[in-house]
Image (cartoon, rainbow, N blue to C red):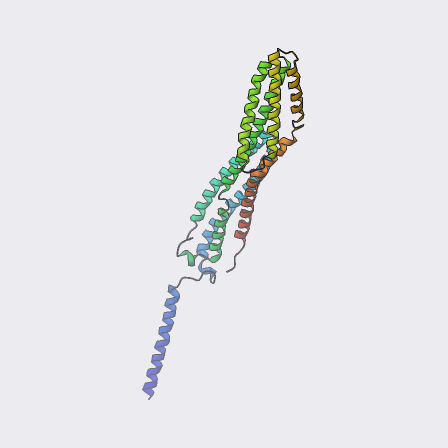
Length: 314
């Protein structure tokens, strides 16, 4: 009986030892549970976090550049609305430089994120802590906010081109009419008629641009401006043609043409407020949308950076 009890005791001891050994082996084979034992991942977390610190600093610099870009975009729109293409062009040129630099920085940051040790590898799942892996994911999301910025800026620049082109055409028209009037006052009616051809060409180009703008903005004010200007050009041409035919003498045809010219002149806009309104309409139709897009990129990047700096839970 005593022998049987001793055998059972030895068997129980062997079973306990076997299970204990199995647990040790299992514990050795299983990867460290990241977050539960930070000391197990600290060795790899330190260099990974150093890389992520550099990425966060670079993204912070991009965020500062977006602040500058937003200021330039608003300045360009204000200048164009005020019919100041020189200032607008300077702002857009400065913005082009910033956008190009942001694109270059973003490409460099993407490479840096991809080069963080162990990220995206099976070993990284247990050799890096969850805080590091989550921070990497948040910085990657922050970088993604800069995608498409070049397209947004191109939209702004495209709107500015339309404004500048229209401003140039309207100015060319007015200059041609004034030059024709000067020739007319000097009795050079044939020369005046030739100069009015330039005014007609400017109106024709303006109408073609109007057709393009009509796809995105209300062109009612622009239509009125073009129609009134064209009506005056026709009346002025008729007056100079009558004077040229009469040799400068005041005939019935000349009097009739002069009356029509005065009526058409009275219908012209009294000042540049209509032009300012036209530019504002173009801004609302496209450039404002581009500025909003820049503000969205700016705000989303700032939010993503704040999230990436927050300490995630274990």
